[in-house]
Amino acid sequence: MAVIRPFRALRPRADRAQLVASVPYDVVNTDEARALADGNPLSFLHVSRPEIDLPAGTDLYSDAVYRKAVENYEKLIADCPLEKETEPSLYLYRLIMGEHEQIGIVATCSIDEYDNSTIRKHERTRRDKEDDRTRHMLMLRAQTGPVFLTYRARTDIDEQVNAAIGADALYDLTAADGVRHTIWRIDNTDALVKSFESVPLLYIADGHHRAASASRARAELKQQSFAHTGQEDYNYFLTVIFPDSQVQILAYNRTVHDLNGLSTEEFLDAVRTQFTITENANPEPPKRGHWSMYLDGKWYGLQMSPETTLPTGTVAMLDVSVLQDRLLDPILGIKDVSTDKRIDFIGGLRGTKELERLVDEGKAAVAFSLFPTTVAELLMVSDANEIMPPKSTWFEPKLRDGLLIHTI
Image (cartoon, rainbow, N blue to C red; front, top):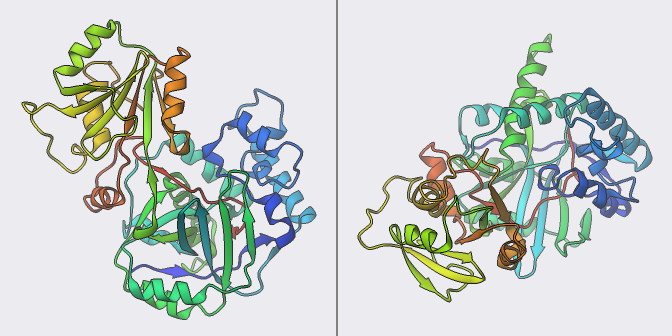
């Protein structure tokens, strides 16, 4: 069963929500965060990326950064102000990006279920990133950004969500990127909570580091507690839960800085040993099992050669795995995409024009456009308790931090 729990959100007033709402901390670097928050003292980036208010070059993991996070958080609570709900609630969070619309339930979920894999994972986390968000949570005693979960859609839950959408939203704002964010509060939560008891599994779509950090923070707070009951707020973590039928995954493309010492013709000859190559291809692959490659101002289409042995295994069959195992590793020498500085990743809305620009300007030697990983593949890998290759999924639209905070 899936446990979802109403919570008393700490949140801004409606007339300040537009100023507070910020992109997730991990989709921008320090310079980008500083530019986004410039001139806006209420931006939640001052809390989630507090180094923007410290001298350039400050160690991101220094004591000063976490002290600044607390200082900025307390200032935001006082100046915005942020106010805490008097009663626990669930919320609906609707995202509209162009023609795409998705509606999720904002709730807290059980860390026990995360630890025992009732909430499934598909990504390996990095210890340094866990350390950072764990310390951030413990210093603030708050989870300030939600984990994006999904589940196999159910008609009964869809009907309840649609019935709960009313005219009076807590927030209805359009971000600078054109994405519309609308949030409603649900006071009568019993039916939804009961319905989720029949949902066998939840799946992390995005936010593995936040979830892992919430688990680590809980372990520390539990150890400090003199009378732990299991019902304390720190036993739950902030989530937005969307049905799989509404989740949108965009391509996560790759660029490589050089051809590993090969000439263009030598590189193409090596690629032909693994793939059938066509010229003047569409920059976006038409379906799974196809890749597009941009090299010397031309788009090439790649397909597995008929004589090539097809991969087997849940993860090995993914397009990102095939590209890695048949081209990036053996031909370009990219052994570990997590650590190799010769490869970069271009996600989401930046599209194939960005790939062309990087190659044409000499910032990359070759670019690869992939067909997006599907939600079905994500669930399949998670159900097999396996791990996707790094940078397999890019979710759009992105949720905003700072609108609904879970204090622990």
